[in-house]
Length: 246
Image (cartoon, rainbow, N blue to C red; front, top):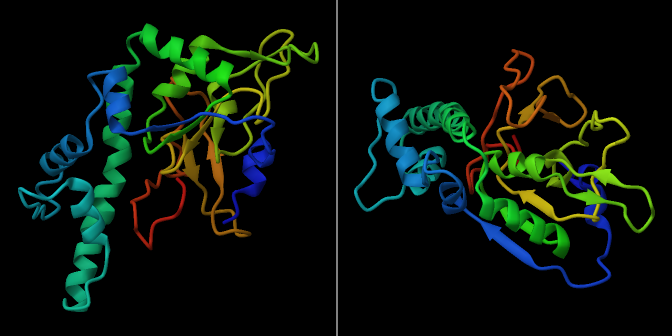
């Protein structure tokens, strides 16, 4: 899968250095106490799937390490054992989106914190590049509440929404505001690279050209369409069988 056709403005060579920020699960936890850290997510999944999955998680093992090991075929195990482990991992992966959706819904009941909105204003001014390993859409939601404006230099003002700053997402739908044509993916504001995918992206099996395609959800911060035509597929670090996006 080539990201080039989705990245757009990311191919532009910046005229000046841009600061880079790296975000992990702790960032989402700082936004809202409702968001779980990785190991807490594993404990919640273990409780939910106790009757379906054998969680042989060691005390000194992180949930991420356990899940990566489960989905990796081990040469010293029988084929049926590796298949069973892979099936367990796939079931856990399928539940991750559901669990995170529920936490995001609870976190979205409150306004984005002031420090986050101020940080977004700083990133917009810096035209920063933000690398995140988080699936959730709390950052995009905060952008929607802050709505930076670009195009002042060309006298063509446009609002920037959460979908417009996220890569490698599909092209965002045009904004529906009076006098606002929407801002496509560009380097005019800060850019967020969601390296593990997003709760707002879907895998579509009907795209035969590349095997899958990315489809944006209807609206960040609102209840998303859960139609049978698209399904969520979270990625697992170092997993050879999971798609690179979801």
